[in-house]
Amino acid sequence: MTKIMVVDDHPMWREGVARDLAEAGYDVIATAGEGAQAIRVGGSLKPEVMVLDLQLPDMSGVDVIKGVMAAHPNVRILVLSASAEHQDVLEAVKAGALGYLVKSAGHDEFLEAVRRTAEGDAVFTAGLAGLVLGEYRRLAAAPVSSGSENPRLTDRETEILRLVAKGLSYRQIADRLVLSHRTVQNHVQNTLGKLQLHNRVELVRYAIEQGLDDTPSNS
Image (cartoon, rainbow, N blue to C red; front, top):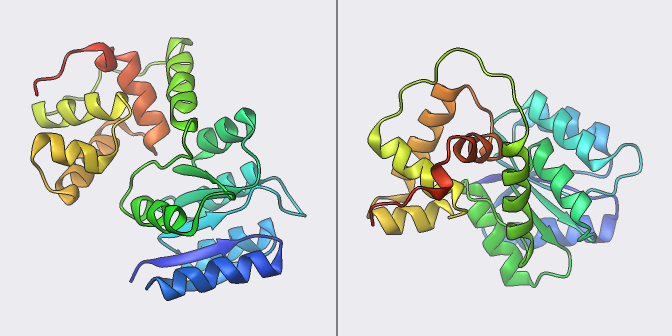
């Protein structure tokens, strides 16, 4: 079972989310009501997915994301917040969150978002995915420091990277290329390692910098 940690400062909401996840078959290994606790416990227990509210009493959600990612880089963070403010969304994603869902989402939509997050897909409330992709493009237009020559990617890795840059989910990429979802994930992880990048945000930025989002794909 996928190991999940729930972080929210409202006890009733936190317990309700944890209960829904447990009933759906997930292993809720911990809950927390404060950011510092989330970083400490998350780094120790290493959940696969963290469902995180941005509004916490002791520190900002963005700082929590950064702290959790530093302590446990492989965690996949799904923000579940009452805020749909664009700045909140962008800052959370830049800090390392994989997806962002507003609390007005329905029960089934939430569980589907958790499932997809566990699989490595970036999940956003309707209307927010375009915002994030637009920010990727803006960031890619900014000057960045470059090291030595780019590592060599395989044709398949480049093909998948091109589709990631266009905003496709891993499952959509798998369907388009007639591959298993796991195979796509493995290619993405290999690409991240070769490029010395840490998450999907950095990966998409790299792809756009290389012009891959505008290159016609063979489909």
